Picture 1 (spheres, rainbow, N blue to C red):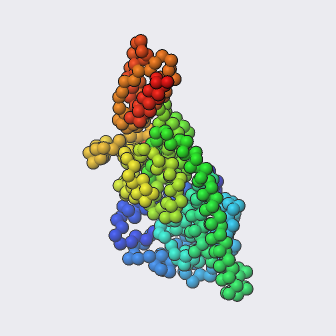
Picture 2 (cartoon, rainbow, N blue to C red; picture 1 turned 90 degrees about the vertical axis):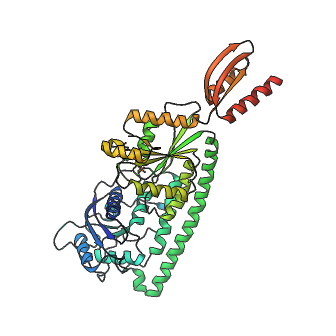
Picture 3 (cartoon, rainbow, N blue to C red; picture 1 turned 60 degrees about the horizontal axis):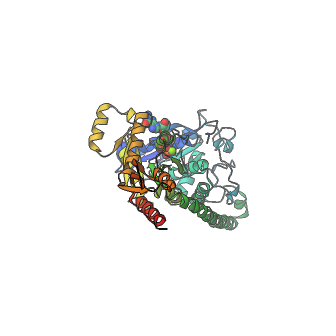
Length: 467
Ligand SMILES: Nc1nc2c(ncn2[C@@H]2O[C@H](COP(=O)(O)OP(=O)(O)OP(=O)(O)O)[C@@H](O)[C@H]2O)c(=O)[nH]1
Ligand SMILES: [Mg+2]
């Protein structure tokens, strides 16, 4: 999906907590910046602080909160009056999200001013979004909104927004909507200065409870719809189950879709953005093998993937989980690849794919210095080292995929009578015909294929010969 045409500004907030290394902290902030950019915002500043814990009130200490307010046009104090402007961004999605309208930042903020309304007294650029690299409690989020006058999203909120905007298939859209509502329900509150306030606190609470109930009902409805969509999917999947399947899995932006394109000659979506792919796509390995090998491209993983999304995306990934082999793609040029590798392994375990045979594919080696590549090769002797942009590497990957399947082949010699040519063509379809000799009884075929295929063909041949 195209990003909003008019980029808006964001400020990132990170607290460097004890036990987190400098590299981990830096790469986490870097990743947040990319997530925010995927949402269509430009990062104009970062407010970071080393602290022993996250402040229960507003995450940051007083001084840092003031700095943050300076970047957003807010007062920078928790006691600031709630912003008056009726800003959709700050409000939860409507309890009936069936309409499912796009929430592009510029729509929320047509004038391009900070949602707080008041212009920054220094007349500087004001950020409309504060993205916090930690999970926020509803009250921390509210306090930060008060102090900054900006929209506040935590990491989970940012990720859910991205999924919400990018999900295309019916199934993915339903899954994201469920995750989004589940995330929103506890964060619902009376809108400040709204009608409920005037009607008195009791009425406000009742309205809030009603909204929450509507959300719960809506989630139940969506779950039913999802179950129906998934039943359809299962039927379609069952038809494909025969085929041999390889799934590309890995951290977001590792290069899965790039490899998929190169290996299948297809035009799946590739972008230097996080979560470019949200749906599983299946294509045939190209040039085609006999029998065909199918390749699936899947949604990328990310650290702290909201648990709800892991659960809901499990079914998007089911397709991949049925693969007989996983290619675990890693961005070898990203210094935090070891952590990304661990995250991916963790999620694979969580969704029950931990035992599917897999091969590590260290991608983007064109970006590595020769000495770094050498030491990586020594460290990971079983991994494949490739650049998805190098046709020779891609051809090698294809060859290795084919070899994985052919390694399980066994060889047999079958005699096919001349009046059974259909069987001969089936053999060409389902395995590798090494040699054909023509004699009186028929064609003697030296054939390599999976043991079950050979057993099946033998049965077919024997049955027809007897009759
Ligand atoms: N230099 C270099 N860049 C690569 C390579 N492979 C992929 N990229 C780039 O990395 C970025 C991400 O590639 P994608 O193929 O979209 O990554 P992905 O793993 O599908 O990402 P998600 O769908 O977000 O999970 C794109 O800008 C690619 O052009 C490579 O081998 N070398
Ligand atoms: Mg992709």
